[in-house]
Amino acid sequence: MIQIRYFASLRERLGRGEETLPADGVAKVQDLIAQLRERGEPWQEVFQGDFPILIAVNQEMAQPESPVRDGDEVAFFPPVTGG
Image (cartoon, rainbow, N blue to C red; front, side, top):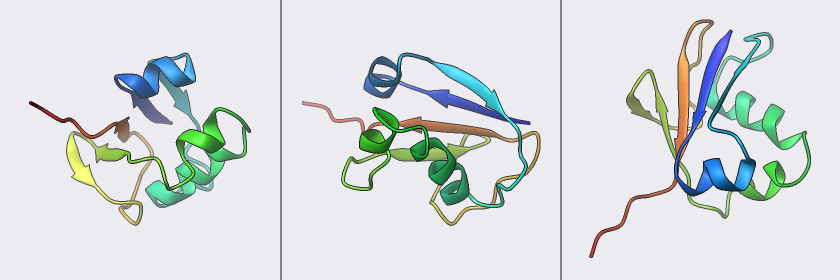
């Protein structure tokens, strides 16, 4: 199983802060994103590629090409800005 966490505005837009999904068919973060997009809206909009999202796997910054394994935690969050 893969533990998924959504932070800040992503949590609000998707209506959940976390969930667990089977690791079947998921070798990279981009595979996980593709599965989430298949849910339709608002998932497609959030994960369309134009919406800036940062990714962490096991609390380390990651990219869509980063590997994901059974038991990993994947976090999605918007870029943080200050001012």
